[in-house]
Image (cartoon, rainbow, N blue to C red; front, side, top):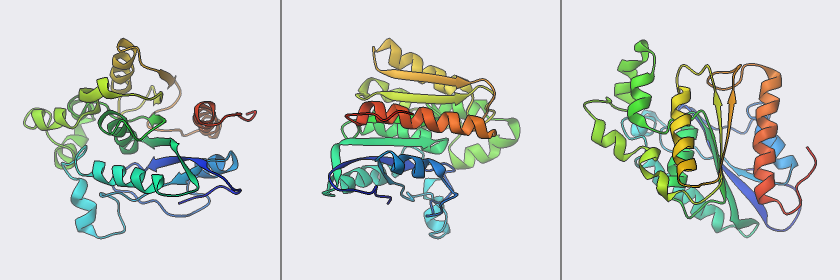
Length: 243
């Protein structure tokens, strides 16, 4: 948990890490975005939901073939916890993530739609069937073990895909996608954005033609960070600061 300086109620970003088998740790150089958000008056809660490393192999493997399953309980309880804190403005909670965290963000706003004020998805899968079909050939065995087989597990994967519940979205969404992403191909973001637009929803879409699964260039990292924080600030702060 990262709390900004000062008194009063603050907007907070719930950040879901990627991987999903990764780990949030309190390191300054691990995520400069958190420092950026704090400097602009946002709190950050970055939990290690099930599937994270560092808590034993049993906990780590809970996410296997359960994307869009029980981790939603962790996300929901994180939101409930934030609402219980007197320094958090319950009406200004955003959810954010990239890769698996982007998928979790899309799951949160489609299947837990009443907790959030807005969302930011970076390179997140929207449809687990098309996601599993599109990964590089050498990933397919791992994909079957981690997520599921797009043919054998079709019904299960569609029942857990954010695209299935896109009609339930209530909040603005920023989607950032790398055009050259070989892991979560651009078509994943395209289909989510297209469906939201068809529904008349509030979605903003940026495709970075020079990047893939995240940023590799410092100037693009800065551009993405600025875009994310400006977007959150636009909706969640009464008086946005100059960039």
